[in-house]
Length: 318
Figure 1: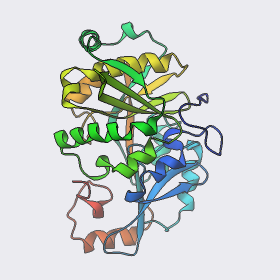
Figure 2: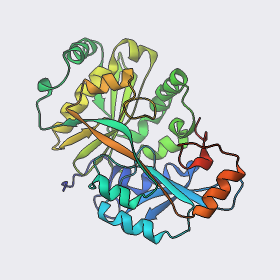
Figure 3: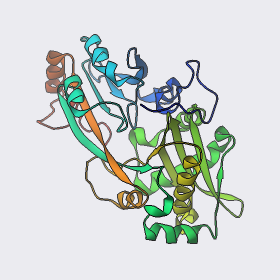
Figure 4: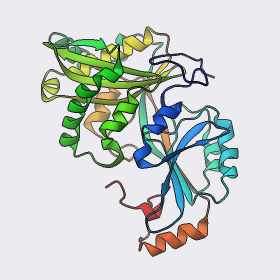
């Protein structure tokens, strides 16, 4: 079991809930669906209208589904009946479950989605960080200073400017592009920690983290073109590891690499691997509650045979 740690903004009404567990995070994604709490496990999903139908399905909050009591998710799913056509989500790799339990709860699909790089904060930094990363960190710290934002909400304009560079560089669209309103809400979620890299008084890079229990989850990072040139990412990640270790946390979840396939190689994967002490698997899970409607909607939309789940939403985020 994990211990409870309070970070960032004030506690929620139900005490120590923060980060992806907090209802305010689900509310930040309201443009993609209506937040609905699963009452027993205390996790949040997003209900969505299915195009061309009066039916609803749901997805877990992006980028991962987290809940307070994994032992109760099976009961929650059983209790949904046929109110939803289907549910899909990416399970928190730090969730308290085993693979057999996931497969029993999500009977239609459980498959490795991404390997999340993780950091055991009980280990000294110099014992695991790659030598290449340490060299680049030293170079970066000649030009940038890393700061913890005392008021995350006040960093919205800087963050939007940096994130736009990321969107343009990688042609990000769909849920991963978020919106100004979504980010405004995310920056006040209890548990938010924002780190900034500053060069000559200008913010050239930022990282957003969510702390819940004794884990800090890397949420997003973005840099200006100058920030890329100055290797601001190295200064920020090195600082983050020392910062969270110094505040009694046990783990960092750095997330996976680019793309949506487990094992996919990328520069981002190699970057994160250089900071990590290991990996944990994030599983993509799916369950169909109304098979007749699922089949009918899929056929009505002319969807070919596909591994995409749910099949009738093939191509929705492309």
